[in-house]
Image (cartoon, rainbow over all chains, first blue to last red):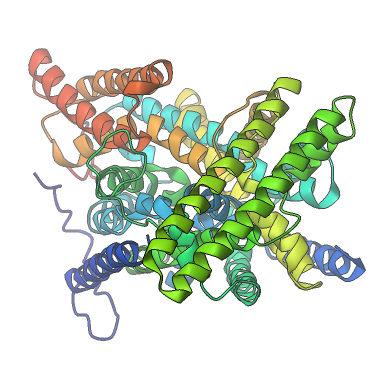
Length: 48
Length: 576
């Protein structure tokens, strides 16, 4: 189940230092999201 | 507000209007009016997306939501980063490849005209209703600052935003939002710093003890509105709908210079959304602590409405409630101080007992606030009895330094106008491209006529929003009302896009009737919850349920119809 690729449109590189592919950018965003949720769980445990 | 505030306020508003008008004075191309400028950079797109998210509604409503119910609302955003990754990886490349004006054009190419019309209609209905809610944001500001009745300010700001949008177009929206974002951020930081200087040392512990700091709720209960699970799953589907299928957002990144800029803009939002919203809800929780120590904390924060009744024939009734609340509030203050003192001494038994007394005092003062709302409703059934949207604006007007008050009010008002302009612009665009052009296909190449019609539709939706705001009453605060409306109409629409992207064998008729059936199901679930509150599920759950139902119905209907789907031929069809 995946959308059909269109070969006529090339994949742009992210152009962000340290990242060669978009997958790397997505992984960092996902990792940061996990960190945020974890910190919020800890925050609730400490203060609520 | 003093003279300095008024000068700053008027100067800022006039400056924004003049700049937007000057920069967009030659907007006569449909492409520019509807999609914005193709030279938009990634930073502008990212800030523009965030500015739409962190609009005046966010600043007005979110602190008030946290003031009343604690910071649990933050869980609503847990699905957003994941949804944005999916939008970047799947949705955005397809839209950019096709060079479409609206997201619903894609449905027409993938399925058929009726599915495109259905998609556009669901969006228009949902956004049209939301426009009737978002118009409250600038109206509340004006009502509070000028002391005018809310219905008058709704009419005034509604007409103002129609003129602003029709004369500007989406290029003007993007132009002004970038610096508005910076000023609002500055204003929020200023408000936070001012608030911190006025708080007791153990403010965070007081907020926690009074139940305002439970950010994450792990309870697996469908009835709870905000839990980790509803946030992750429901929030994911809600965000996917918003960023992937809503024309107000899609028009922003199809306006970017390249696919890369669009993606970076969305990733920018995915990174900073949760921390940013956390700061805003914390502001609300700390405002709650601040008002515990203010001797003149109002029993009802919409003072324009409250004063109208205090000065009326029913005045003695309202003054009696004020007096009762003042006594309960003073008693609660004593109980809070007793708890903090016991806590500082480290006496655990005394602390537990003082904490119980403090919570009891909190319940007593909340009961009086409820009595105030009930009395208002009894005296005037049409009165807006939800006052949490007035908490932060009251703080700004009474606690911030002069000059800053004027600037912040001006920028919040301008930001609210910009958000409304973006919203009305998207409604005008979709009405022209997906509805009007469908019935007038020969006029598609007449650029000037299309722009002319888009402006008329924009104005029409503006009047619809004003009428909705004036005649329909709702019991939720602004930010929750918006999310509830979205959760009712988005799921079926998202389901159609999911089928379009991933289920190549499903054709137009199957997905059309599946969307209708799943929309009926979501409406039935929502209204069943209203009639039988004991069985009501949190509104975020409507998103995955409705989307999954649409996908399942599509497969089922396609199996019943039996004939294989034959997508319309053409080089622009990505699944062909």
